[in-house]
Length: 247
Length: 247
Image (cartoon, rainbow over all chains, first blue to last red; front, top):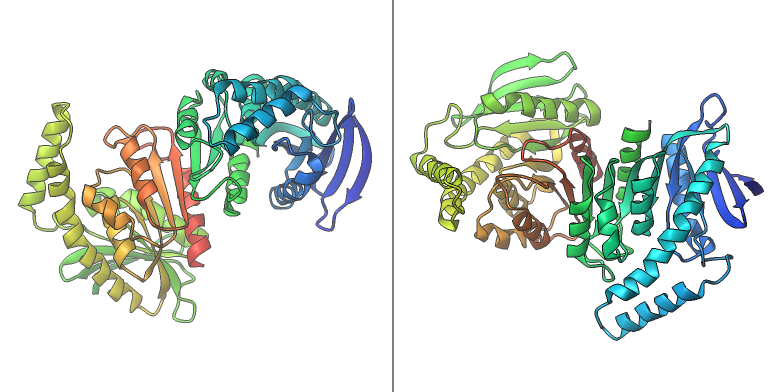
């Protein structure tokens, strides 16, 4: 991992862009983070729309975590997104999804599998490699939380990565049937966010997924509104969830 | 309303027992409450088990609200409970419910209606009379929140009492079909607590009730576990919900 830019922000947070084996990422650290007081880390997941487009939302969350709770936060670009090379198979699946939705057809399992499973397969080891690199920095200490969507990436990470102690997942994307089985393997504390009227997401499927998670501590936060209508107060509710488990 | 006892607690909270037309109640006020800085009020609902039995739970919540957020809190005895006169009709319905549950039979609508509707009819005006009296105290100021179960009492109060600005309801009791219609009339911000594995409460009915509420701002907090297993952290989540709407 090498840092490609470094910018002190006006709230005392240090924002650094990095590159890890050609994968771009961003790390935000609170002013309080040092080798003697390393900060817990939150990995911020996001949809595959490119870091540049997602930046305002990601940076807003990271700076809130850093200034209000002293957490460090980091994110990496997903395969096939942003400045990373195009990925024909996933672009094809995305086009198939768009076509089905525009035609008002049900989205078949084969479209969901083709869209999500390769992304999980490829991105989870990348998040783990980023975790290796981030945790080697003296100012970052465990434990680690993961938050956001693509929820299937979060499910896989929560199931297989022992350094992740808690996850706050957004049930806002299509979930392959195979991921329900993996959800049963998740044993860490979870908070799951559901938009009650999410136009692109089946409510009952999201409730079934919440039910499937194997962990003994899980909380569902369902709010009225569509996919992009997550209320502002859920940012702090998520931070307090992480504070309970990471501090 | 007249006060029957007054006890300063070691956290600075003042606990006063009161009587209002023979109905016992308790008021807790924070040290900060005064005529010049009146405290917002939370009405704490509870199941019809008697104030004496419910006291530890109610006082714990009230003292947390007072010391952490500066809220006053109050509760009144439900009709037919505690030291109030027995109420034969409701006791009969409760016996019918117990018999049906012990026999593993489905609980019929007529049992639910007989158990809950008279309680709503009689107790809601009593909570409103208590509100009149409490808001006449110089150290108590609006706005007002309501929390707890019996959820049907909360639904009726949220629908008809304009002085209540926000409600945090526990979806942990049987709800008559007629209350779903009233739920559609509720327009204030709501938080609804659901225990995912509540043995005495149908999960799907609780989700349907959440769906029915007419308000534009509603949040469901569902947690793993049975009726009495509400996690401790939901106390603060509820307090923060009230802080958003009452402060």
